[in-house]
Image (tube, rainbow, N blue to C red; front, side):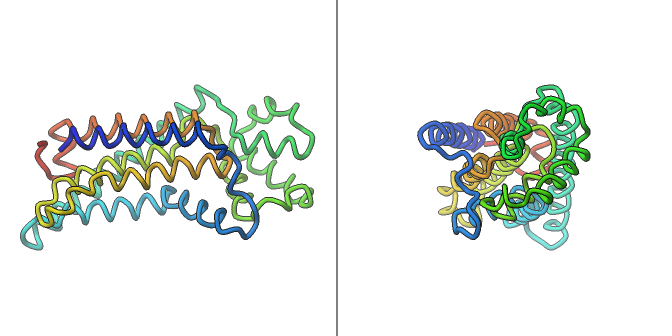
Length: 255
């Protein structure tokens, strides 16, 4: 099943790249009160901190389905939850504190906002500030020049301000593809409802949606989300291949 999961992840990445190349998605979901904007924002939030936690809980529940007895179910659920929270938290910290500061890719949304206030020349100096200082800067500019940003949905605008760090790679897309690998492996090993095993690719549709939503909202480029997706697949494959981590997360044998 691990082989199918990896193939599913790689196919999902390939489709994501094709869609990003074929269609002009960047900044397409920013119109106030539009269905596309609300849907895209909801989708991207499903891979944020709260959405990821809910995804972890759902994944943990999925791996208890085949277990017999309350005690055993609780043991499997607790192990999986602890393992996933630790793993995702560690990689999130590495991404924010190490990877992004090394590559120093600027967010498309930052470039856009500076263009709106005719301050694109200060882009390099802006990134010499701390993340908190950048957030405060954009918050103040948007407040003082609200008319310039009136065409941007308020939720999207607040999201742009809150996302004050560097952009490469996309943490949301990494979380999505990593969780999709975990979900896919669990669905493929679900002996409780064998017919559902054919749906092992379904989690990657959600993960692809996350990648598309990040570009559509303007907070990431196609390079950011592609790298995040690839990292999620590599890390997920490694965790599911190694006996200790696979048993910790999924309580399943590799097949």
